[in-house]
Image 1 (tube, one colour):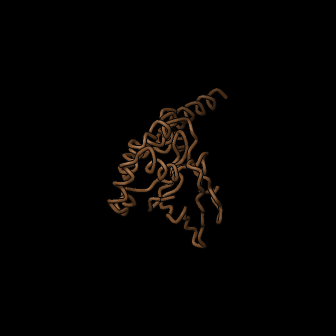
Image 2 (cartoon, rainbow, N blue to C red):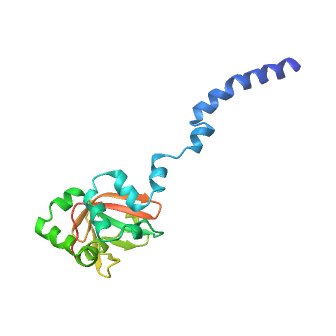
Image 3 (cartoon, rainbow, N blue to C red):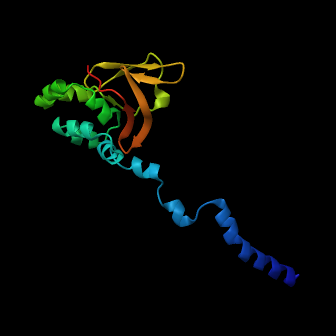
Length: 175
């Protein structure tokens, strides 16, 4: 009987490391955050900066004095136009917006923000989402699943942040 106990103990000692490896992760790996978890620890502004492609949006947010708000507790849902979306806006329109940062620019930017955390699964066809500036955006969902927000196409959805969520859109929304 002692011999079998010894054999079983040796087998257990030799096979446990292989069993742990087969299960996928060590304690150290389990404690380190995934890229998604790391991204979710950053606020909306830091997430946009790190993601790249939002230089124009971040510059506009800073010019309008909205950076601290979007770093705040939230939660916020931001429909974030890409740099390409800003490039499609006529230069004279951008100049006029940046000439009035606390007025016109702020109004356009707050039209891209909805209070609360609205995930793509919360969106439905015909839904109206009231923005921070008080106007509403119509949400449409096509038969192919394409989501449109106020005429802009959602190209990437559900980028979670520490204080909300970002949905990337292909057009700058103008109220």
